[in-house]
Image (cartoon, rainbow, N blue to C red; front, side):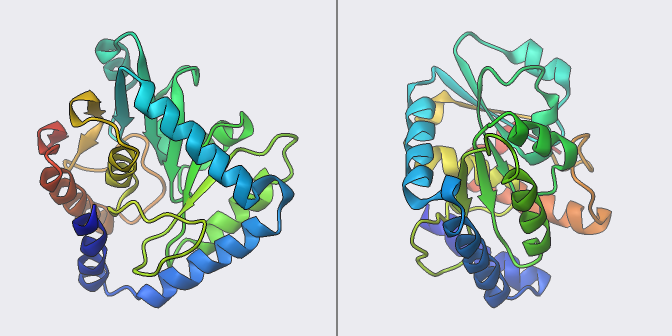
Length: 233
């Protein structure tokens, strides 16, 4: 997955973003989590171990992108499927029974909050311009009777103890990088709801032109990983 980490430098250069801002957001998230009894290092490691086991034992891992339609999920469903949702796309699921986790940079709004309130695993991503969003979400979730398990991720070239850089850039392609890093066989991975045609039904609030530009990077990453056939364009 080294190339999928290196591509983050290309993305930052293309959008004029600072890696230092990514580092500061990541470190701030780690400081926040370390000061919360429910999100200790051991609890986060346990959550990641549980997630890995569930993904590896699944007959098929289905990654759900923001352009998914609920009908697609029902039509493609196979016995033994386990789902990984890209942020707000979790809202397309009628049930969380087969949900392994939500991969989120915290713009999934009410759909993300619903999953968190029901203690679903959140792979929580910190980057330079979402520090305010992740802080508001975590402050809201820490007040829940059972906060969701959190697995923190970042997009820097630094090694941050207790935090993961799975590679990739958008929630959708980062979800694929995460699944692959967990040792899931390529032939056992299926993607639905990935498109470069426009904003998906489950996309968070965003600036449209920038989002379209981001989706081009998403397609490139999925294509380089051998999953370009799943992208509608």
